[in-house]
Amino acid sequence: MKKKLLGYWILSRGESYAINSAGEEILTATLKPGASAYAFREDGTATGYDLTGNFPEEDFNWELSKVESHDGVYSGKLSVFNDKTKANAGQLFIGADGKLSYSIAYFDNTPPELVLETIHVPVYPHKEIWVEYKYVKK
Image (tube, rainbow, N blue to C red; front, side, top):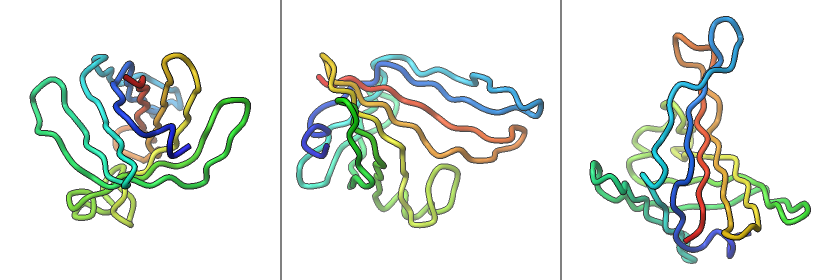
């Protein structure tokens, strides 16, 4: 799966969700398609791009683990990290190890698709929140 992840990926869909106090799943925000992109390199480094021009590009390291394959769908865990995530270890979606980890699914479509989902975390006033992203390879 590592080789499949290499290259330039552009956001095609992004949504944040929550479980409210009534136990219902609600959509809390949507991201504009094309607003961000990632470039993953074979040496374990990558760059995140804000294509809206509001934030500078950000470099980080990445690693894959727990990779499985079923009928052309690859799944596992993608962790990204840099000095900024390590300085914010344990905050919101960043683990105690300073890594921002996603469940990842790669779909061998045309074009290839990548779905990332953050961990679910409790954030007041909701029981939990999470974000799902879908990227297509360019």
